[in-house]
Image (cartoon, rainbow, N blue to C red; front, side):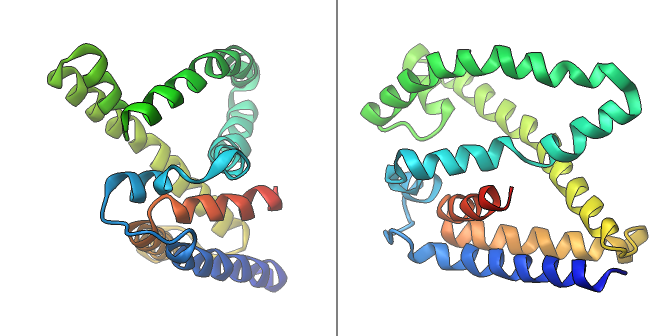
Length: 196
């Protein structure tokens, strides 16, 4: 085990945990409404949103999955480059209008938007379920990324004993997200982007 690496890891893990739980006090508002909890009251602003989007885009997918795919499968992994080149201009065209409409009408989720546009609660439900199902591989990827980092520190990650650090990390993440809503990932994204 590399004690210096473990010390740095523990320091940043503690920092992120403290910031995650403190986030409930950042731009304090009652978190009993979905737009306050899930959208930080729509008061993050452009600069903070830039950090949040950067924290979402540059994740374990960027630093572990794509390089791993390139190492394991070769040129097949280069799909990420044209995918990004194609997707970003589309997002820059669509998302500002989507943001404007959602803010104007008070929509919180994509299902709210779909229901209002098409008047179909069934389509809105399908949209919500698709979002939940599509999030599952992303969560799995993040957990695998954490496991790779922990293994890189020299800590054994096989079996039930190896799952304990993942369980602890997931429970802490779930706890501060539950208590702070989007405020926690937003402030953590500032730290993460600064580190990157």
